[in-house]
Image (cartoon, rainbow, N blue to C red; front, side, top):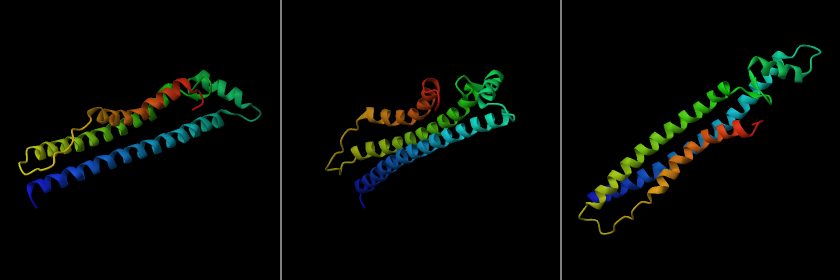
Length: 156
């Protein structure tokens, strides 16, 4: 194999790895977001069930939990408890961003090496840089959506 063939194969495999990394990152974040929804719903249900005494309405139990600070108005988790899940989503998003940036940096290195190869008969197109930032921002969409849902969608 010539140097050009090796570099082309390396850039091809790193580009493929980068796309798979983005796919997995989005899939994992969607799964975590879905899981957080059900975990939060279950926490609220368990808090209410523990607070309800025989003969007492659930409304009274919710008011008691809101008064004690365990639930916010409207029967949603307090912001402090809610942010634990959001922080976890953000940490996972940052991990996928770091991995994607690492792979894309290696891809750019090999692509630049390929440009310097005298044997190269066919050049490669210049990358569209805003796409990289859109892909990175896509990972931050999930924690951001989680915060927006808490602030504006009262029963999420």
